[in-house]
Image 1 (cartoon, rainbow, N blue to C red):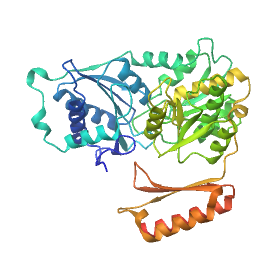
Image 2 (cartoon, rainbow, N blue to C red; image 1 turned 90 degrees about the vertical axis):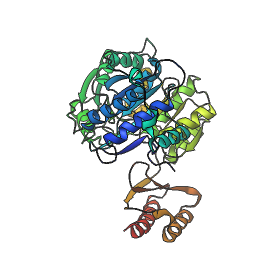
Image 3 (tube, rainbow, N blue to C red; image 1 turned 120 degrees about the vertical axis):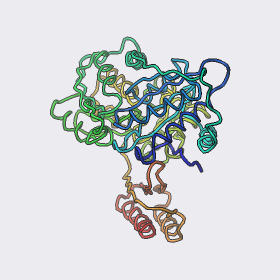
Image 4 (cartoon, one colour; image 1 turned 30 degrees about the horizontal axis):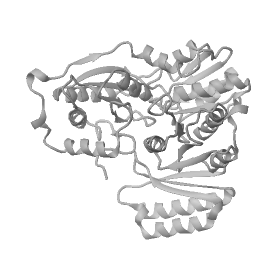
Length: 446
């Protein structure tokens, strides 16, 4: 068990869990862990558009410079851009200040190693041990303190990187694209990238004020995008989340396309082009059984991991896959990026749409998803899933579903919530088993 780190860095209420004191110690501890060698060490720090980002960034800078690391400030940038720039700028560590799709009241600290990949559990535990240790004994001397500098050219660097993930002859000419940036980190780079590739771009969710990130916009609230696509008769809508590492698509009919369908589109395209490094892809236990059946029909496999894009990526790296992701829209294409990249995933889909010269609805409807029900139960403390009544309810639910469905129950890695998901061919049965488990969890959590 880790004290501070969850499934995606350190996350919690800003100035509650994520305090300046904690951010200072994270900067010091991470800086010490990644000081390897005698060279001048550097860290890049990006953030999304939350008000608390200023506070956390300042505290992190104090932490890193106090242990002798130079800081390069990127300003508001997508998480995948920070990962890319960590490698590109030869930094020893990268930091993204973001709580992703959470509301503005929350914030988080995500760390990347010098290779641009998120840290593994072992390194996170090493950092946690230092946070709770005697950091004041490990500070740099007065002559060895770090410096901080703001880098101005990072937007152009990332835009050029994103464009180069497409062949040079591919343009988006003739496409009317609505992009929803969730009032988040991609509010500048995403519309500019699409425009430079030739699309007619209508941008929404591009007026961040520190408070409105993910509020009624973005991939977790796609209704605004659906309305705009229908209103303007656009060819496609692209919805990013607050830090732009996930994406959902809205087709020309206003129908939402999730990450499972996107992975199906890309998997088929890459199989046809002989670009898959393994005959399949990696997804989590939450991906729809319909995707697994669809891939099976193509002669491809679906490897499943625990929930969290880091676990998908770990499996991809260990077993040689170059495509993976989550139903929520984290799509990882390791040929291009070391983490989920919502914009790059959208560009890959658009390239398929252009090549096939078919509407997005026709391209993206790969399979009919099985009925899948997900409900959340909030709890105060303790471990509800260990209670006998809950264990019994889960066993009974699995027996009722049999081999024709799946039941997944797990605690959230970012909030005190138990997620109960079931799927199968019989929708009424799926509903019933989910309600049974939810009722059992609710009773013990009350």
